Length: 176
Length: 451
Image 1 (tube, each protein chain N blue to C red):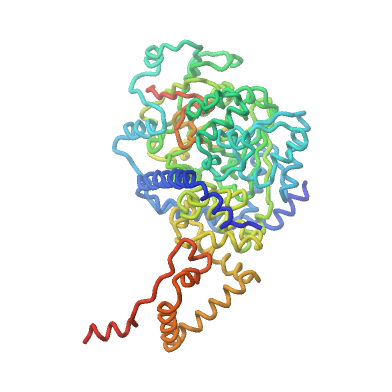
Image 2: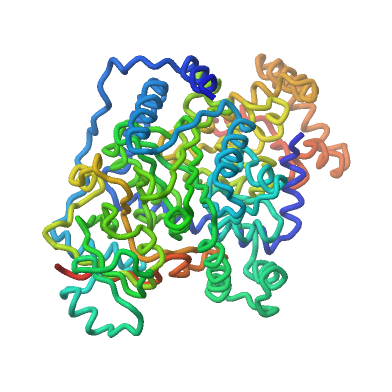
């Protein structure tokens, strides 16, 4: 085992790179109206942006099953809810993704097991592209985190898009 | 020995299937074009991705070691495997330690390459592929024909038949939505009682010591969040310096693969979940050897764009390539790994260069395949072809020899029966008509025209 590592590394060498990492030589895409761009991208990804507060969305949906809102108090031992309300650190205009980082406050399994996900997003926290997104999040503090772009989906049967392959079939982003 | 032309002829025997396959992949290629076109900086982004990969591959040992150090600091176990056999043995030992019997697996081209599923199944483990496309393939007892769309060669009716026979869905059911629901129900039960989850790795971050897995279904997240043990297998080329570079690769991957702006889930696993274990197996399996003179191929991020655009792949199907990774990049990888197969695969290419034009990390694929052709032509089976090419070169070197040959050709065209001429091109003329010579020399026609 230790042998495998030393043999592989002996092949490759382990001296630090003398030259710095290549820097981007282009200006990434920017948007005049990031919120509208975000809404379009999210819709293309099978999700939906509603320009209202998440609590109002929840009232309008009036779900049958259980609801857990991680912005309020909850029991981390609880079964995965039908509706899971998450708070996004940021949103990405170019692809409709939101960054979700549970920091182990609630179980990771709630995210893929919930039937519906509602996300509270501050419109001021929408960045243009993934470049800005990764620059903004504290990547060295992640334990488990995920960029979610719309609901779980598949097109493995004759390219027909089906939402809710394994995880949530509905993903709605509301405003904070 | 791989016989691409033979296998392709078999695939083309079913014209309906071949047409649907061709059109489905061209549709994906068009979606890719639209997604690429939406970014003004697309071409610069590709070049930047190429430079990052080149930099990382040039200092691969350094970045792998940093990845290991930082991953261990996060509580991740790291193992190294020189080849497929070591990788499979490590995975089995980890499973045995946990007393695991049932395993849920998300897509991993590396474990396909290592033959992990058959290895574990032969030892009594129950392995469930959870990506819908891979699950269809597993239930059908088939092989994947595309790295992103494993079941692209099957029709919905065929999937319906497989599900009817294996999961008891109603006979004749072929609605994709209903079939997907049936698979979801069946797989949900397996997720909930799995002892271990195995995933691949799209990117390993040296600075943060974490791994990133990209899926549309969320099957990797689901498996890892429930099973107590998560094993992630990665090739040595998957490491990148830090999460900052993901800003580049997450913008390229899904746009190139399916035309989506990003996959539905871009999941970061930087530490085991509380009470669980996360083990990463770093596998070489011939890669460090490849680094010497064809490191371009190690830039590949497995998006499948070269397959979707390839006129040969679209019309011959993934199975005709006879290896885990089909299409242009698959041929290039296979041709150098096993020169005996190079002949058939290097010629399953028109050298049109469309693959180079779409590759997000700018791998010069058609150049690799041209080199593979040269190597293949040295094999004894190509001796007649070599002699004919030499003769042709000798003829065209001298204007008089060329003229005599043209005269002979015009004479043959006048006196020989058509069916002989039609067969002169060998296999080439099976689907094409051999061109007929012009009635007079070009120089004669020019002289007449110029008076």
